[in-house]
Image 1 (cartoon, rainbow, N blue to C red):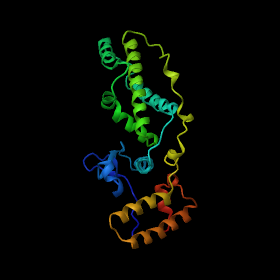
Image 2: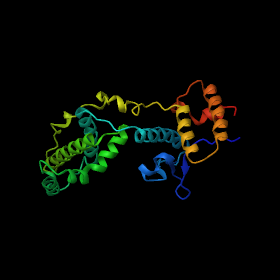
Image 3: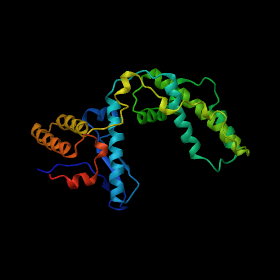
Image 4: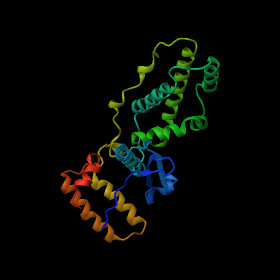
Length: 254
């Protein structure tokens, strides 16, 4: 029997490796795609394998987030998440802010002190969803709306910062340190299960098993693979998927 191990795919035309994975059957409706993929941005096979393991970990976190009930997120945590958004914006434009008229126009457009919920959703809804997924958190509607409000504040802060730069003032943003550091984040108990960073071999197998059976595939295959997974973890001496390398499989007497 051949044990199929997830591995990076290579684009035939470019030689660049990519991550590809089918969306679990129980999440296809909510996720809206039958398959996800993105470039691993390397042509080196060994580097691609390392990046593929990290991609598996991140995507497993996304699937677990989607399967977890939404919960309330404390305001401090939302501001910390918004801080990551602010830093990513600053990193986008460091040396050439452009004409000051760009930023005055931007500030005028977004300067409504109390924008409508529809406007916030249009402007920042997609970013809020992305940031929450990256944090491994499933937020309720109220927390998500509050995050959109914080992203609105961040956008105005960043625009003002870039306006000063465009006028020749490259001093640090005096409000850049207002965001709580990420390491102080404490998510509610309901969401804590999806913030774990350790992905186990057996845990990944269980996710595969659920998807396999949901697609009407045979139980016998699951039983056969479970034995192989047991043999693998026994050989490795641990169950941490992040510590599994290509060399591990080369040494495994399958």
